[in-house]
Amino acid sequence: MKVEALTYGDRKVYSVGAFNRGVADWIARLPTIWIEGEVTELRRHAGWANVFFTLKDPADGACLPVSIPRGQFDALRLDLLDGERAHVYGRPELFAAKGDFKLRALTIERFGEGDHLAALERLKRKLAQEGLFAAARKRPLPFLPRKIGLVTGNDAAAKRDVITAVTTRFPAAQLVVAEAYVQGPRAAAAMVAALKDICVEQVDVVILARGGGSFDDLLPFSDERLVRAVAACPVPVVSAVGHEQDTPLCDLAADVRASTPTAAGRLVVPDLGELFVRLDAARAALERGARRALEREQARVDALHVRLRAAPLLLVERKRAALENATARLRVLSPSSTLARGYAIVRADDGIVRSSAELSPGAHVDVQLAEGGFGARVEETR
Amino acid sequence: MSTPGFEEAQKELEQIVERLEHGRAPLDEALALWERGEQLYRVCRERLDSAQGRIEELAKRVEDSRPAR
Image 1 (cartoon, each protein chain N blue to C red):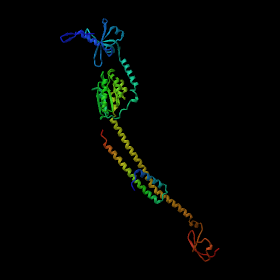
Image 2: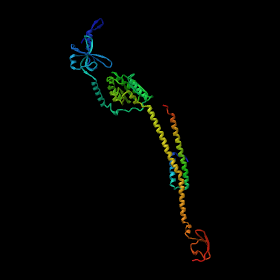
Image 3: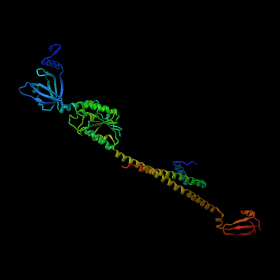
Image 4: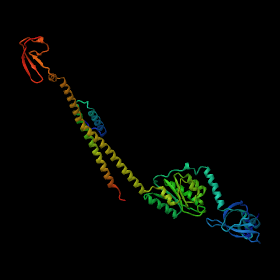
């Protein structure tokens, strides 16, 4: 549409109608799109051709007036309540006569929690199929992180809870905090950026924490961008969002899910007191072990010593016994026992006489008996 | 004779005791073995006593350095 301007000297001036028509014409070229918001101030009157309402952004309160032909609205049978969330399909329009900007709606769909849940469910299935939530991807938490990253809202109770839990258990723990919006339309992108920033600080583990909130409040924690950033984080992530019953998708992508920020704090550091107790126990066991080894060796050496002391005497005893034995045998073989049986030994000058041929009558002999002896002369030989 | 270590000394002492208990060694050799055995026993005792001393000392040092909690 051609918009005519009046000319006053070198100044071009448009009439209000012409200007509005020009802008309206320009706006009319914008595409038809879906817009999400809360339906408020719904006005429907039997005499009006259109139904009017205001679509409000729950995050920042931005408003958009919407109109829809009454017949079309009634045909949808939506029974919309004030504050209900809806998706409105329409195109922007400027009502030239009044300079009124509106969204001219073609259709409206209620987008309640159920629809939201369904959308989340679809996203969850998609990400699960990609393997983002797979158990095999979960990394163990470091035993004692050198630095702990904390992504949370500014001055949030969640932040305090994490810090308290961490420092109570391990006072020397180092924490780096990155604050970010944790609700509203900017939260997801802000947390993705905070997560990235904190990893540059060379942390060994990251806690993503937020206290409880409404379903809407926790939605950024199911945002695809954040879920992917959590999964891609170079160090293990502990997700502690909302209360026990809330399971935003970032919980599934995280390496460990904590039921509360306090629980997350307790998970990332060991209890120093407990560590001391265990260390003391290990030390005591070490000492016991050393003492036992020593006592065992002492007992062995002492036993050897007892045997060593006894051995030489035993040996002498044994040799003495052998000697006694030999002597006894010697005695058996000695002539004295033979003499005791009544035999006698006869000796001449040449020694023991074994044959009468060695003697002649008159020769002197010496006779030895078992007891005593006597000298004799040979009277005759036979 | 260089002083043998604990394990060596104990092993030799064991062999000597067994040899003596067997009773086949000549008397002179048995006496020499006994003397050697007593010597080895002293070596073992000294090693064990010094080990015990180190254990006690270490235990005391640990006890002393325990932080008051």
